Image (tube, rainbow, N blue to C red; front, side):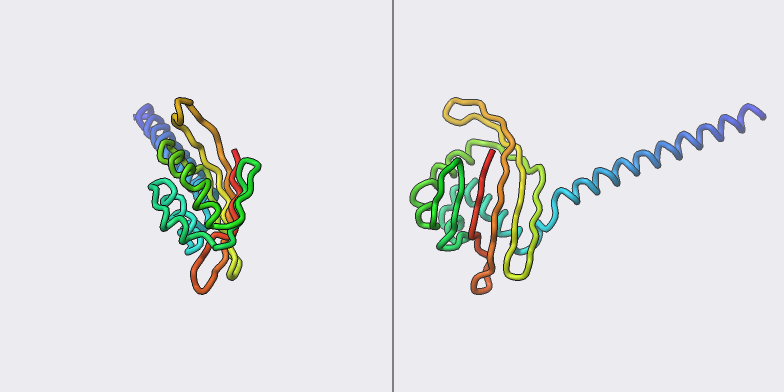
Length: 160
């Protein structure tokens, strides 16, 4: 009888401690995940996600509609100074590129301040484009402004 009780206590401690450990790991993971993705469900965050989807699915009409007419886009050392300029130049090549690649979000934070919002994100992109195997982390900053009741993207800065 003496042997069975200590074994029972040891087993209960191991089971209890293991469950506490697992719960703490899950809390840590959930907390980290939550901290890494803040504000993406806000109306401004949804506009950013719609823009990404429009680019990925070759939806030129939606992509253009989500940009302010005077959007300023910085990418790869270049500047595009309007939605029309982007739509007629770089947008089509961005769409072809994104259709061929797989992108995984690593973090995304959208902060809304009245009629302005800032979206900051990092993602991992991989795939083959024009015969080249690519894998890199990219960063994106977008500034949005509420114009006539709708969120519009007024600035984009892409880098990798």
